[in-house]
Length: 98
Image 1 (cartoon, one colour):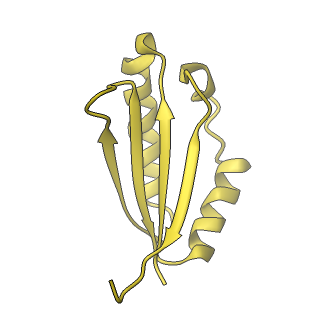
Image 2 (image 1 turned 60 degrees about the vertical axis):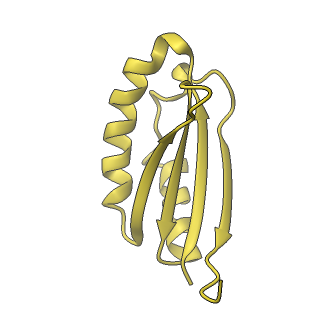
């Protein structure tokens, strides 16, 4: 069953150019990760410093493997200094009946 993950990042206003550069690289890696169906980027209409990334994964296992990768060898070390707040991540399963 597909899994949806929504990552919310709020960047410091002065870091938006660098954030775009970093996230372009990161999203390329994410989209190429096994089990990634898609990733959509959404910039908040009321707060351009807040970006959401809506990820679709083939399964919870694929998402878990990706999170493990990002917590280890795939850590995004240049992201932290750009953030104005802690990241937020929510996940849920896709219900094919709805």
